[in-house]
Structures are given as structure tokens and as C-alpha cells.
Picture (cartoon, rainbow, N blue to C red):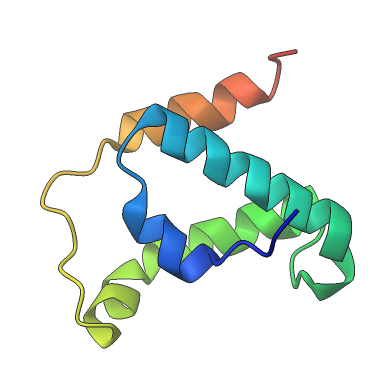
Length: 87
């Protein structure tokens, strides 16, 4: 698999199919490069997700990107919760 440019590609996600390709690339990157992941286990990954979400205004501001006005937080919560038990 060719290298996936996560920082560039994330801004191009506009559909469910784009998001599914992103998830495949993220999983494949973990499989191939888990030693490069700072948060390579689920508890630390979820903690990092929480910390980043709490500070995401700064992330967007420092990159000159406008934070979306409406974020479907309940959709993210449903995705994470469903993955707990979905086969």
C-alpha cells in the first residue's frame, strides 16, 4: 500500500466512503507502523482523543483553519460506542 498522507487527506473527507477509506488507512498504518504510534493501546488512544478534542480550538487556530460551526458530537459518540460491540 502506498503511503497515506493523513494530514493532507483528512481535509478531503467529504463522504462516508472517504471516511471509510481513511479508517482503512489508519488501521493499515497501525498494523505496519505501530512502533511509531505514540498511543498504541486503546486506553492511551482514547485519552489522547479526549485531550486533543479539549484543545482542538488551538489546533485549528494555529493552522489558520476555521473550526466548523456545527459539529455532530452525538454522531462521533455513536460511532465510538457502536464499535465497542459491533462485529
